[in-house]
Image (cartoon, rainbow, N blue to C red; front, side, top):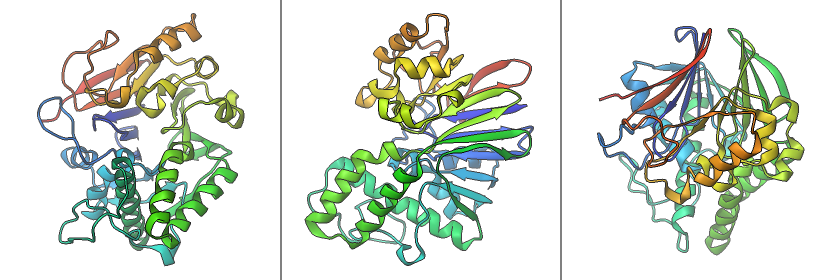
Length: 340
């Protein structure tokens, strides 16, 4: 049996994949740390969710890319003693660059006042800086604790993960990973206006850096593209024969760029998951996306499910929820749970 849980972290991704009865646990991204007003919709931080379930150890943590809504929510788990055996990341932070970036953002850190955020940063850039610093703290803590760190890039096909799970890494390409690694390291040497400009430019491109994963168990596939949208350029780099999956998590929270006709025909999903906040910020869970999916593959009629309650006709469960869980056994079944 394989179980995958999409935690309702609002606008963000936090995904727990378990084989058997928790015999092997993989956690993909950590969600954000900004938008929790319980118990309005059941939203919950990923670290709190793990705590409520009594999970203190992860066999594998994957950080797909460095945006606030994919990183910051898992930091308390790591800092408060949660054990991670192995970390997969698109960027290994060099030892001489451990620590926060120059010009720490204004986000509060317990026990630290921190210098002010650099002048000229937009709201998006400030959140990006939060994510980079959060990732660096996570990376340093895990490295010091003896976690095995692997920098991953495509192609990596059929990699075994016990028991009975294999994973394909479809992106980023080595060339793309090298570009982003150089850009991230150059931020440490930038200052003033140059720092702000480099940060903003990198923020706009960060989704393209996402690790794209397909897990396979017993012939059933789960495609998790992070926020890497299926542009024509991306589709040329990905191995289309390895996109087919029973469950597809939409990239970029179901914004308009999250699908294309070629992509949907290659994946042919039975269930389409959107990790989204109920307020549908940034026009996420865009209705045009679901119409495009139905047009692209007339012979395929996937179910559309959402991590948070959304005011859309596609929403089939109007109840509040803390998590969406899909179980792969004799059949594929999904259910919602709410943690008080």
